[in-house]
Amino acid sequence: MTDSSHERVPGRQRGRFPGISSRAYEHPADRSALVALRRLSGFDTVFKALSGLLPERSLRLLFLSDSVRVSDEQFAHLHTMLRDACYILDLEKVPAMYVTQDPKPNAMCIGLDEPIIVVTTGLVELLDEEEMRAVVGHEVGHALSGHSVYRTVLLFLTGLAVKVAWIPLGNVAIMAIVTALREWFRKSELSADRAGLLVGQDLRASMRGLMKIAGGNHLHEMNVDAFLAQAEEYEAGGDLRDSVLKILNVLPRSHPFTTVRAAELKKWAESRDYQRIMDGHYPRRAEDKDTSVTDSFRESASHYADTVRTSKDPLMKLVGDLAGGAGDLGGRLRDRFTGNGSGSGSGNNGPANGGGSGTGKEGREGREGDGTA
Image 1: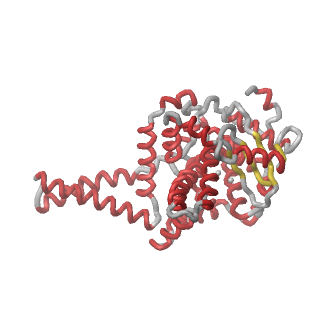
Image 2: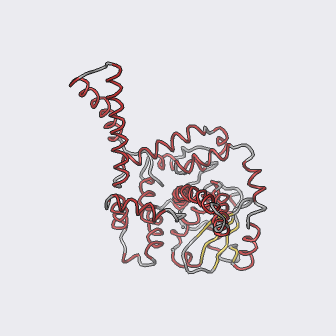
């Protein structure tokens, strides 16, 4: 891609990230899955063979025939934003983009061989220029990460689950895969939110966009701090019954709840990782092939452990307390059987050793928050 294709970049100057790897902004759980899939021998071949079974060609023809393709002649301002986003994230091939008539605000990036971006008229009419720029960056982030491949598979499997519902255990097997894919995809949405921020480079615009998706075009009636307070209340409020209801509510969703997305994005924007990227220090695409799958899984596991340890959710606190209690009990049993202590001395040593380590970890802030339309 040449700079000449971005002569009409609107608004202020924005930093660019030549050769940036999607690993720079991916959520740890999203990154570990993608690294493993990218390193899996024959994975691309299998998915290309599978593409014959998926309705990708049908989807392309559908949008081509019944939507408006974004170009210099149609929705020119969106086309400029799209080229700008690809330029900032150094995505060489600009994906095709369509606007489809739908009053519900939404956007998606799908496709196996070549990703296509689709935005609804409801979203275009809802967001201002800077808010829309973050959404376009969000979708380009999906394309750069390769999320469109797995989203297409998710759409296919969701439809397949309905068709095989009459087969004994067939629906159960498919839905188990769909549930796992949805959990991964919710994390991939947090990754794409970060990509949107890297493109728009305006946290306030990203926040406004998420607020509008939640509450419509009534910004004069909304407040960012109050909106983020809702995420805090959702996280910490209620008892174990509410924790179970939260899980049940989120299971069928492909996206995290909007207040949660806003809180996670703000947390990432204030992190050292984000600042390093803005300063030009980030992993490069050329290094992707050398990425360690083990390290990625270790980072993902560490993130989930930090999430449980620092969460204010009643169920997560219980899990953390049980895990901490089990560790303390294990330490005391070890001391008893190895003769490292007895009586009151053993009791003092156990909690001091176990508790000291746990307190040190708990005193540190989580490295990275979870953290698309």
